[in-house]
Image (cartoon, rainbow, N blue to C red; front, side):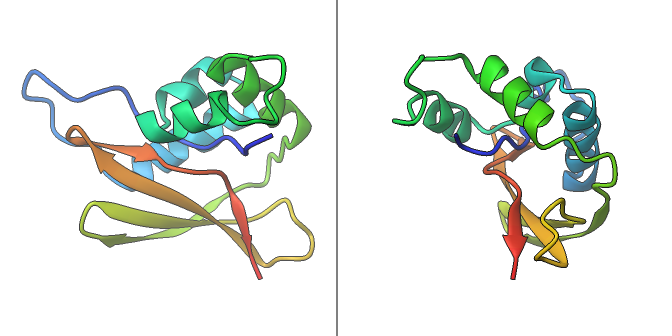
Length: 126
């Protein structure tokens, strides 16, 4: 199953763009709470579509159910944001990792429709 990670609800009505750090923090809180709906709201549209159409999703579960299942299976209350490297409309957050073989993990983000969104799962940095 694809790993779950973050896209924020759209900005509009003159709201300022939330920085990617805030989106990552929201994602980590949602992951700790196993809040699949909030996690999916933080995903980019491409990532959301990709995990729902993943061949491993044989039961055709919704993004929300997949994210909740991922969060429950990989709950790590110690995930902490270390930093974010932004390049144009893409960013990579460095997060402490639940993988004991890696010092930290990466979480990709993209700017989509004027907001930052999680564009993939937490991946260990070897």
